[in-house]
Image 1 (cartoon, rainbow, N blue to C red):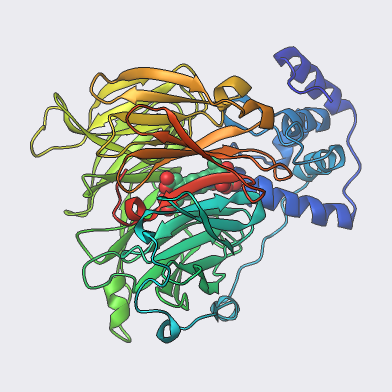
Image 2: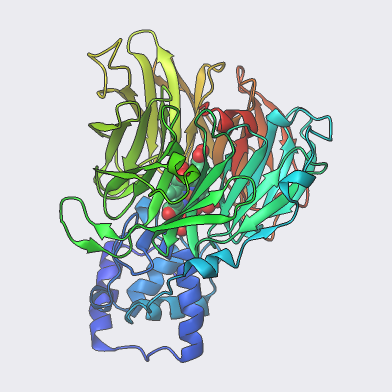
Length: 536
Ligand code: DHE
C-alpha cells in the first residue's frame, strides 16, 4: 500500500468508495477491531468517536470517505498528528483493513464500572506497616528517573547519578505517565488500561507495593500535595468510564468515585464521554485541579473533606474551554492548560480559585507541563510548544510585578519543524530543550533544538546520531535534580532496543548513552525531585 497519497488520490478513492460498500465485520473481526480501536485510536478520537484531539469519526462521514481512503489514512497517517500505524509496522494490512471497516459501523457501547467492580481490582503487595522507614539501598533516590517503557507496560527506575538500571517494575498496558507523591518517595504510574501502580523507591530494589484499576482507559494520576496531606490521597482521571476516582495515597484503595458526565460549556449539550485530562495538586489549598476535556470544565476538588466521615466532597465547577488536554504550573500558582483544538491556553489562579485569562497559542498547543524561567525584560515567563505550528509560545505570567506582560504572548519563537510534543528547562540551565516526535519527517523526529532563554530564539538544533537507524523519534526531555544534565529518549519499535541520551545541560555535549536490551519504547521519563516539586 502507498504511504502517503496526494489530495487528488484521496479524492479519487473517496469517489470510488461510493460505488461499493464493504462487507460487515464478522463477530470475531468486530471484537478484534474494537480492541485495536480502544488501544490505538480512542485516546484521540474518543471511545464514542465524538472527536477531541482527533476529529469525530461518525459512520456516515466515514462512509462518505470510503474504505480505501480510511485504509490509506490508517496506514500512512496524516499531518497534524494522525500516526502512520501501518507504515510503522504497528498494524498489519489485515488489521488496517478491519480497523477501517470498524469505522463504517456504529461504535459499540463501552461498559461502565460499578464501585464494587473497581474495589475488587485493589491489591496491596506490601502494606504500609511492612515498608521501610528509611531508604534501604543507599542511593540518591531523589535523583532517580522513572522511565516509561511504553509498549512493554513497564517502568525502569534508573539511578540519575550513576546511570545504572536499579529496577524494572511492571505497571500497565501502554503505561502513560508517572507522577511523584508529595514527598517523592513514591512514583505513581498510570497505564492506558486504567491501572494505577504505586512504586516505593525506598525499597531495595524499588517495587510495586500496591495497585488498583479504577478505569478501563486512563491518562492521568496525581497525589495530594498540600501541607498536612502529603502522600495521603491520590486521584486517577479516567478517559473511560468518564469518572474521577479518589484513592488512598499509601494503598491505592478506591475511596470515592465521581462521574464526570456533564453539560458542555457553551454548547450546553450533555456530554457522555467527558474525559478527565490533566490533573494537578494545588499548593494553596487541599484540592486537585481536574480538567474535563469534552465538557470544557475545570473542577476544583476539595480532598480535605475525605477526612470527615459522612461529609460531602465539595467540587467547584469553572467553565473554561472545550478540549482541555495537558498543562503545568507557572510560579506554582497559576495552572495553565491547553485547550488544544481551539489553539488556546487557559489560566486558572489556584490562589483565588478563578479562571483569569485565555491566551492565543500556536496550532494544537501541547505543553506537557511547559517550561518556566525568568526573563530580564518580561519577568517570569511560561512557554508551550505546539504540535501543528513550528513555534514555541512564550507567555508573561506575573500579573503582580509585570502586569504589562501578564497573560500576553511576549514571543513566538520560530522552530525549524512542526511536530513538537514536549519542551523542558531547569532553573540551572540556560536552555529550553525542544523535541519533534510528531513530525512526519524522519530527520526532524530524530532532532532536538535548544532555545536560548535570554535571546528567546533557537540557538542550536542537531540530529541525534543513531536515532534514524532505529527509526526512532526523540521524545520528552527531562533534567536531573541538579539541572546539570538533560535526558531524552529514543522512541523506537517494541522489537528493537534503543537508547536514552544524556546531555550536559550547559554545553549540550553528549555525556552518556543508556542502553540495554530493556530499553524498548522509552517515552516519558520523570526525575523524582523535579516531578515532586514541580520544577520545569
Ligand atoms: Fe500523553 C501527558 C493524554 C498520547 C506521553 N497525555 C498527557 C496528559 C494527557 C495526555 C491528558 C496530561 C496528564 C496530566 O498532566 O495529568 N496522551 C494523551 C492522549 O489522549 C494521547 C494524545 C493519545 C492516546 O491515545 O493516549 C496521548 N502521550 C501520548 C503519546 O503517544 C506519548 C507521546 C507517549 C506515551 O508514552 O504514551 C505521550 N503524555 C505523555 C507524557 C506526558 C503526557 C510523557 C507527561 C508530560 C510531562 O512532562 O508531564
